[in-house]
Length: 86
Image (tube, rainbow, N blue to C red; front, side, top):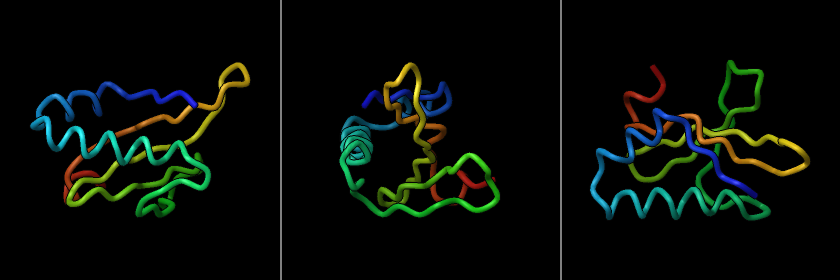
């Protein structure tokens, strides 16, 4: 499975300290397992099956997809708990 990050998620990770980035990336790596590991809930109001992963006070918005028969994990956005849903 390939992990693709959006531009916004990479910008957010660039602002964090290395310890926090390592924690978030480890949690994202857990999404590649079957079944996915972590505190995961489906998001309401979206038709593309978006889900959110809770990593402490951060939230990772993601979805699964395929391109050329390869499974891809799209990381849509990463942010703080209060700001990510706006």
